[in-house]
Image (cartoon, rainbow, N blue to C red; front, side, top):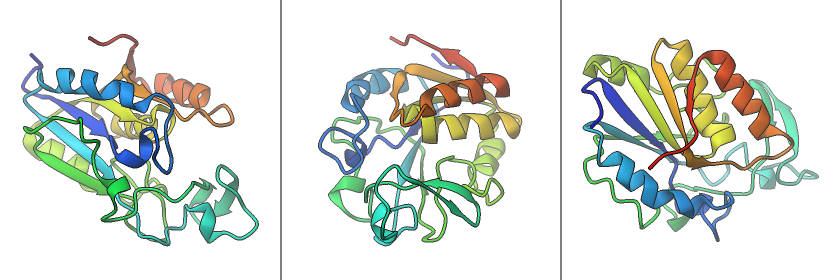
Length: 205
């Protein structure tokens, strides 16, 4: 069992990120059962949920002349443009039906501000606007964050790096994550996490 100060952060196990979804991550459905097993060992679990308005700024459909996976500059920095996904209240935004974590204590929704994207579960993509998760964890006395979910190279990695920046111990359960890996994003994310002092666990059971 995990220690009392450990928390498992399960990132974005949602239909749109799974096969057949609007922004399907390759082999994403493979990690649902392992995450269920891992979660059963944790007394504290937090879920995150991408939760976009229909006209979110990160959608390529908002930017004439651009296609999904193009990169543009916005006031808060570089933004990868995505297919429409995880629109509030749609089936695509719902958690995968196989996710079975009834003891999860909190759901953190992110990406609901129309004019800014949010990969990290700790900050919007301006790296300064907080989600409130850090305060919740500190008030609960949870100091070691374990991460699993989607996608390794975006929401998982940004959460891991921000967690370290905020002073948490962070471990990424890489075997319970899957990546999009566009234009070298996975290699870059792995380097960023290691440079930040994130512990990487390759295999999970």
